Length: 389
Ligand code: PMP
Image (tube, rainbow, N blue to C red; front, side, top):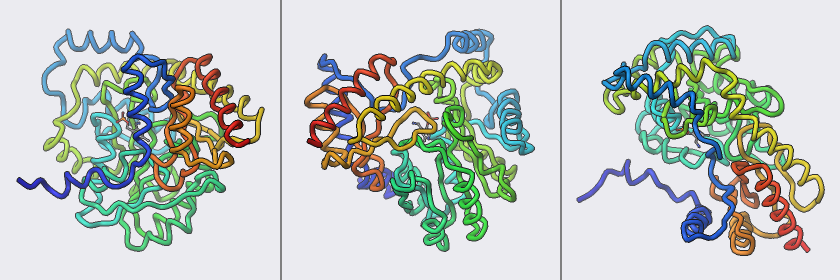
C-alpha cells in the first residue's frame, strides 16, 4: 500500500549529523558516563507549584473536553502578556492555544500556505522546520545565513527569493545559534515582507531567555500586525516541555480559521494543563528562575572561550545554546563531535545537523549543572586546541 507523499516527505535529505546524538544516547543507556550537551531540554523539571495547580484543576474536574480555542483565562493571560511586552493591542480573539510551539508552527503554515507554495526559512534552523513546511504541502526553501554576519538573516538574501514565496519563518532568540536578531535585522525583514507581500511567522519560544540586547517581536513593528503570526510556548520559558502548551498569535481572521483546524486535528489542549499554564503565567518569578541558569552558564562559557584562540563562540545573546566555530581545527562539525564523543565522552551537536550554514560548527546545549558544564567545556576546548596543533 502507498502512503501519501506528504507523510513520506516529512523527513527530507537534511539532518546529517544526528548520528552523533543517537550514538551518545545509546552509550548513555549502556551505562557509559557521557555528558550530553545535545538537546534543548532543561536540567530542572516543572516547578512543583505548577504541578500542584495542574493537580488541583484535574481533581476539580477539569478533565473533560476543554474549549477548542483554549480556555478564556489562558487566552486572556497570553493576550495580556503579549500586549504588555510589545505594546500591540491583543485580545483573546488573537490567540489560539495549541499543544506546544511545534503544533503552532504547523498550524501557522497550514493557515497561509497552499499546496506547492514556497515557504521560506533561515539556515541554520531548528531541526523540524523543513519537515513542518513540507507537511502542509509547501515547498520549503532555505535562506542561508553566514557566520561572518553572526547568522543574522540579510534582507538582500530574502528579497532574492521572496518574489515567488508566500511566507517567511524566523526564530529569535535563535535555536541553534543563540543569536538574537537585532532591531536592524528585524526592520529589514519586515521591509522585505511588506515589499513582497509575505506572511511572517515569528517563532519566539525563547523570548524569556535574552542575555544581551532586546527581544524584538516583529509583530510590533509598523504595519506588521496584519501579516505576522507569532508562535509561543511554555516549554522553554517554564520548563514545561512535557505539558505541551503553546500558542499562535495573529489577526482575528487567521485565528478563527485556525480554530477550525484545531477542531479537526487536536481538539484543544487538556483543561487542567491550561489551568496550570494560567497559574504559571501569573508568577513572573518562575520564568526568571528557569532562565537564570542559562544566563550564568553563558558567562562560564564566555570566560573559558576567552582563554584560548582556536575555538570562537558565535555571540550567544539568548536561548540555551552556544554555537562554536571550530573551523580552525580543520575538522567538520560532524567529525569534531564524533571524535569528542569517542575520546572524552562529551556529546555536542554537529552544526551540520541544523543545515549547511552552520558547517564547521558545533552547538553546545548548556543543559547540565554549572560545574559539569565548566568541566566538559574546558575538556572540549583542550581537545580543539590539541587537534589544531
Ligand atoms: N521552536 C524552536 C526554535 C524550538 O527549539 C522548539 C523546541 N526545541 C520548538 C519550537 C517547539 O517546542 P515546543 O513544541 O515544545 O513548544
